[in-house]
Image 1 (cartoon, each protein chain N blue to C red):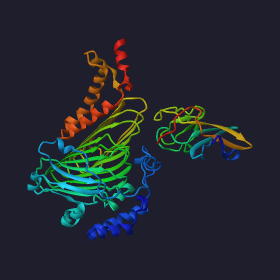
Image 2 (tube, one colour):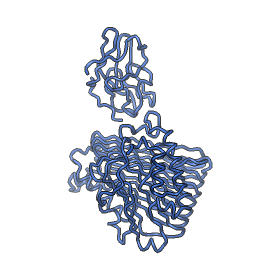
Image 3 (cartoon, each protein chain N blue to C red):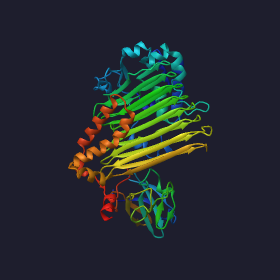
Image 4 (tube, chains in turn cyan, brown):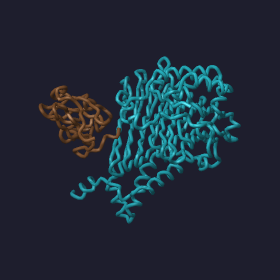
Length: 456
Length: 113
């Protein structure tokens, strides 16, 4: 076995052959492997997108690929809380271990299958789309400048292909549950194609056995065709010890709509890139985020919206709470192409610092090439307002309960809007568990407004 | 450990920061006349080498965003940095600058990025 840095074209070629991959796929892996050889790991001194998070400190790439023999079943997933269930995909330790179809999805012709077999069985779609959003093409917005993406392009292991055919309105969610039990590197891959005027709900769920030291380098490509609707949720519910790199990139076509919720509470280091290329006029995206960081955790959240077509709209909102010696980075990006007239965009980040020692960095970035647009951006980082606490306590609610209500209410704004079956309940349960485990006596509030009112 | 040779005094130009490694710790050395100051070389805001900056008003300015860290206290003059960088004791022995990185003289935490 070789560590990630030493992945080479020859070993990938033999893996492709052993797995019976079609020639086009093997060739793409070879091309990626060559790019990989030419690239270096991200350098926080030189790469602006990595400046807030030291790659060499927070990510260990000297790891071998985790053994593909799945070890144990994942814990109960989000679908357990969904009435009527849904399609359940399970990827354990780098291998797709099961796909449990749902009658409604099956009847509608929804394809959910191993990406490797789909490369042959659904060759037309997979060949057309796999790697299209990660590879730089003429005028494209590839992500292959970053070696962590090229790595997945070259060497992805457990993969799933999802196809919701045109005009199919699927109400049951499709959940892809990535579970880690083995130490090492994991390279999951997701490709979803939502046909024109189709409707789908997709969950990406991430869990691990607590304390297992692993690097998960994940890429999800989501094609949302004309007039389609996609509701997406990604849950980073890792145990401690996981370093997670994720690119979840959607290409949103004419009049298509995407709502995306990123819920990040677990793992040692999570660097999440939810990206949205609005390539058709009238496309609409609502990227939402919730994060709760505790002692030792480092979350780097980089939503990126590219307005490439005219009259598209986007509205980013990420809210977080931090405690202990934890770090979060919000580096939002909205790019407006010179032809994207009539763009409407807004981008906001809120961070609550609950206890001393936590640090939240925010850069709500805009890059605008077109003047005929509306754009907003903002960020606020602060402590709980003592007036809120005072108001609640004045009504006989004890301090701890009041703090719990304030933090939960702060996040409920986003959960209520996303309104994703199963996800809201799960997220609330995690939030409540985190608050229950916290030392509420250490929570500091900002009493500036309260004092000013007292003096008035 | 303790005081370790870091540079030759003659090799340092007045008010021109230099980056050196002392016991695997990146250190920014600044000479002002006969005195030599040592600060942790990583800005407390983001990962950036302070030695890349200019010496202004008794401090070294981070060339990325302009926070200027006082040579004696390590404290930043302005945002975006909010925390001091560690400062280290220095001495000159027979024309050699020695630095002790085992303890920050201002008690500042080592930058974690």
